[in-house]
Image (cartoon, rainbow, N blue to C red):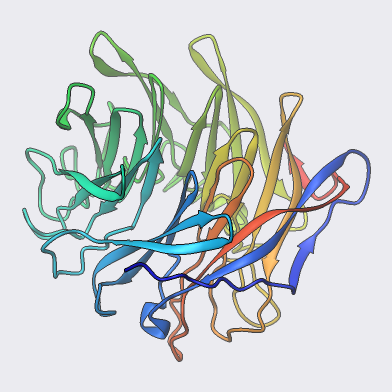
Length: 419
């Protein structure tokens, strides 16, 4: 029997509000999901996903609360509130599989990565596809025909209709941790592997496939370890589906990249927009690059970074883009004395992405660093934010936060810079 979960309403929220010209919607934290099993789920919120009227929140804990295979809590939005509806987990798994390390959804399907799965070989990885019919049920277990030990297949997942792209960033096909992406096709019924993709210029330490995004006939693959502009400067490869194959058509390496920018650590495809995170830019302050599709070429539009930001904030570490709304975590943002984190929100207006606000949580309920913004997701209206707790001190229950429109205020361009 499913139980009704009562969600807490947050009344203390720190918001950096815009201060002049055009009106913009202001988002506030309105509800908090607290780990059902208390401190044993300190990583509850390590990944989040919005699927229609459902929330998905990943945790390291298994069904018994132990740090073993991992699980995903599902919450359903009803007229009178949110209900705990389902607990997803990989069947017959006891090893620390990291189930829920990445998630993506399309229509009423949810794809969950488990890069630590060792059923085939140690840390070879797996992914699991679920579908909502009358209830959530497992419809396919996705594993490559051939995958080596330590490949971490499932570290990144992307789902669009009947296509799935799953990254194995530590695959050794072109050198140690050069990386690979596997394509699965579900158009004809059973989901089957149809292609293994490597970077045309792949090399050791590229981590190709550590981020992936799918939209229609376009596939974007991040390779934050690429060294074209210096060690770990990063790159993104673009593939297009032509004549039955996903074919490389463009490599994106902005001229201004420098060592350890980690360009490609996160990315999103939304319509004619490609959004790429570069969390290491400017001593880990972080930046976001936007690209627009012009014919068959993705052209740089802007580089966004906060003028009020400081080093180690990691803007661009996590990204979600939908219906003209962009959300990026700044999980490294330092509070008064500990790492609090935050999220920056952007809106697409007249062909330009504009910063509208930064949201940070109240700290009254915890004392450990919690890196709010470690994971983010939006459906274009609502925003769900997750966190992790990797502190050495006393364990505290994990959380995920729901943000919604609550007020309107004028905007400012002075707090966000672009070039």
